[in-house]
Length: 284
Image (cartoon, rainbow, N blue to C red):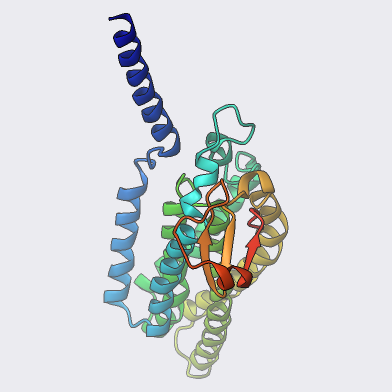
């Protein structure tokens, strides 16, 4: 009986340990993500339904997030390397996910984000709702792309299943894509303002549209070239936060490697092995 009890207790302990490991490696997604993302998608759909938005911009807003989802799964294993770190690790999951940016609690950053929200979202939203059609149409595409970026950031920045490199690619990709839209917005606003001035049309909204497009072009260009690339990226992509799975590449196809050096899925051996290159487990 003593041996039987010992075996039963050992089995129970193994089950409990396995459950604890599963819980450690499979943390819950923050509860706010799904409802907030759903509301943001609903508003984006309303924009698409209400305004005439070029198809290429809508395709980007669909295809780029899809690419990031696939890259997060196939290249980074849904952040498994960070998720499997023990609680005693100096950069465990809770530490890595605790802050998106080390200065996020400082007053200047709070003011900076408030300015970005006002300039990039609130004032353009006011413009597309109240301004004349030609002024509103010039602002809607940059607004939709930025809103899609915010939706993706809501889904990724505090999500333990999203690797930090993917979280960085969200704003980076959208910022780069929006640069040409901001230039187009400014050019269209300038042309509309000159046309309204020449025809003695009330130019208040045209002046507002020109000023708003100018401020957005300057603000977001500086945000991309200075804050995103020079200040935020080196911190977010540090090795301790951005460690990833080892990958074996066969041409352009990544294959995740298990810790023991075996591939996650079986593949051909022999001559094919000579064509594979092993990439170190660093994402940056």
